[in-house]
Amino acid sequence: EKDFKRAYQSLDNKIKNILTQAAKRIESYHLSQKVNSYFMYEEKGTILGQKISPLAKVGIYVPGGKALYP
Image (cartoon, rainbow, N blue to C red; front, side, top):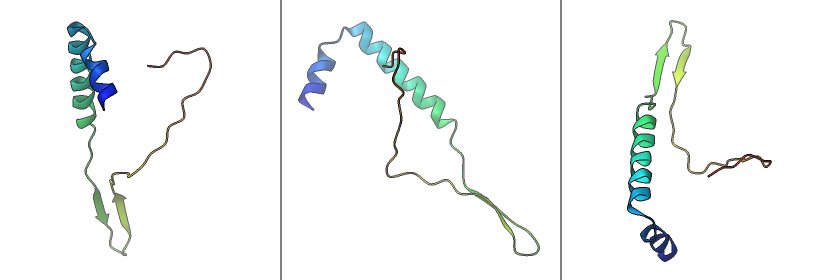
């Protein structure tokens, strides 16, 4: 935590503002993607729908190569 604070404090204010703005835009975009669970029940007992559940853990694969990733 100390390293993160020290790194953040060492940033130029312009960069801090850019990162803050980017974080707000990213959060706003993804909040608009939120979907609620829904279910439909058909006559013969068939249940259709989608259940949205948060994940406790996720994994990500970032390929190697010549591309630059932040």
